[in-house]
Length: 41
Image 1 (tube, rainbow, N blue to C red):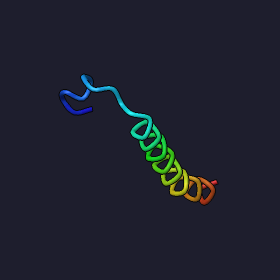
Image 2 (cartoon, helix red, strand yellow; image 1 turned 90 degrees about the vertical axis):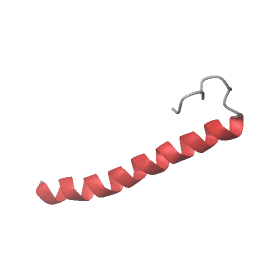
Image 3 (cartoon, rainbow, N blue to C red; image 1 turned 30 degrees about the vertical axis):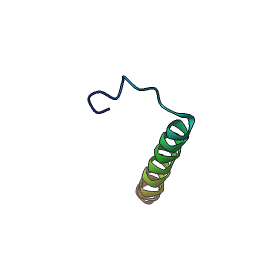
């Protein structure tokens, strides 16, 4: 959160974009972590 962002309410589009970005990041991390764990086990 940058300074001054709490003043303006997020639009529906911004919320959807944030959710998509978070899901993509989680999917990327999972894609990197799971093969490493399965290789160790």
